[in-house]
Image (cartoon, rainbow, N blue to C red):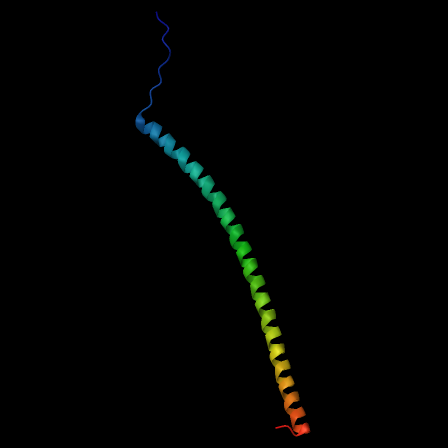
Length: 87
């Protein structure tokens, strides 16, 4: 009696099925990590966009105030020229 090592046989279909399952699992993990990172990046972009909106509102307010100051200075200059008689 000879002691031959045991032989294990797998069909190519079995090997490919196991390989496919392993790849699917790894891709699912990678996709899950990427989804989490995309969510975090989108949240940061939303925060930055909100800050830009706030800055834009401040610039609008400053612009409005400067326009009012310009109007008041123009009225003051016209009033001064009327008082002096310079037309």
